[in-house]
Every structure is written in structure tokens, then in C-alpha cells.
Image 1 (cartoon, one colour):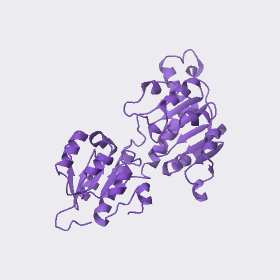
Image 2 (cartoon, rainbow, N blue to C red):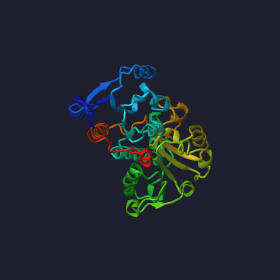
Image 3 (spheres, rainbow, N blue to C red):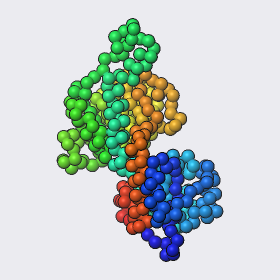
Image 4 (cartoon, helix red, strand yellow):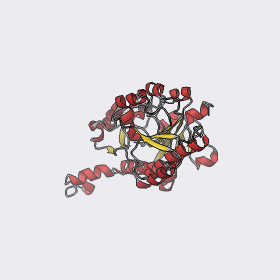
Length: 343
């Protein structure tokens, strides 16, 4: 992409940048990197209205940048200068960005798929095994000094994977990697539900079922779906009622996929034996009642919290910025924009 002058195209960068300094240095050879001084959405809007970014072509954003800009929504997009033609998001999930106004303005949106698959799947495996075997509860019991009085500190007996039907809700890159990680554990059966059935070569023996079948047949449900209008509170009073008594739920996607009020109720009454959560509805202000439950294995959204994965995400972001500047099109265009046939 050229600007028609000798000046470099501009990239508005929202950080933080932790490990991709070298790739950003390479990008600075072909683009001018500018940054916002705003501390909140109101200040960022003022910068937009004042024309501070009128010649910016690309916005590079991180998950954390929502604390400054708020959601990239219709209000914000309406204030973007005409020069902005792409937004490059760091991360696989891009629910902080509304795609409809971008489609209207023909602004491209990229994310960072695949590079998060391994780390997120590893996190799901940790949560799932801890739930199956009551490992976190046993640690709490150990700290309370119960080992001296009771076998295994009084922790209830858990289950081996060999007796369990594993249901994977969402069989994209992360869901498939979760399956691959768990196949060696020897689950009784692996089933999955997806919007579309995978080609047989991608299924690797997992059985495609309807959502109702997955809910009713699974002993363990691993959630790996994007957050959108169709998936918000997908796990709710009705869908939980369809599950087996004593089901285990693991969520490494987005917190609002689960109605936490219903989750808490069913963790308390035993319908759900335990849950493993890396994500919550109102992060970082998660419900203490939920993560303090002894049968909730919880993490503070750290599924991709590794040096290697963070660097890969940041490098992917730069790759998309570079692709747009050089060719006028990002490499990892998100699915909604692909379907729009505008790019």
C-alpha cells in the first residue's frame, strides 16, 4: 500500500508490546509508528475528533487496549478518519471489536489464529484433569491440615479418562488441539459439535453430533467457541438441564459463553460436579462466589500467558500490519469479513 507521497504510511499502535520489539523495528522501516496518549475512551475520542490520527491507515491493538479505547464499536468507528483501512488485533478472540460497522466502512480486521492453539489447549488439559481428579480441592484440603487425619486429605475419589465421554463444543483450531492433546489419555469416546462437520481427515476419530446430543452424552464438556451474539450464555439453565448429572465443564474460550448465575447454582446443587475456568463474565472483576467454590478450578485468564505464545501473537499482529501496508490486505482476515465478500 502506498500513500502517493514519499512519506511512510502510519500505524497507530496500542500496546503493551512485550516480546516483539525486533519485528516492530522491522515494520518501522516501512511505516511510521504512532501512539495515543489517551488514558481512557473519552480522551481517545477527543484525539480522533481533533484529527490527531487523520493520516493513519492501520490500527494495531491488544486485548489490554480495551481499557483505553473501550469496545471498537459503531460510535468509535464513526469517528475514525477515512484513512483507516485496517485493524490488526492481537489474539484469536476479537469480541472486543464489532465487525458490522467495519464491514460498513470496508475496514479490514485481522486476528491471530492458530498461534494460540497450543497454549490454550494445554490450559484446558490442566483444568480438565484437575476437575476429573479433584486435584485443586485436594490442595486446599492439604493446606487445611487434613492429610494427617484422612486419606488423601479427605478428597473425594476422582475418575480416570477411560470411563469418560469427552464432548468438545467448538472444533476450530483450539478445539482440535484440545482433542489432540487428550487423545493419548484414552477417553472412552470423543464427540464434538461445530457449526459445520469437519472433513473426515480433520476429525481424527472424533464423532460429530448435534448440540443436544453433545449436552446429553458428555461426561466432560470442553468449551472452545468464539463469543458472539449466538454464543453468549450458550450454557444456561436450559442447556445445563440437558446435561448428565455430575457433568464437568471446562471453559477456555470467553466467560460470557456461560451464564455464571446458573453455573454457581448447579455447582452447589451437584448437577455439575466441577468446572475448570480460565475465563469469567466480568473480567477482571470475577464473581468471588464462583471462584471460591471448592469445586471450581480457576485461573485468571492465562491460557496464552507464556513467553513463546505472547511473542507469536505479537509477531502475527505485525505480520498482518506489514501485509496490509505492502499489499493492501491483511493475511488473517476474520471470518465475518471474509463472508462479506468486500475484500
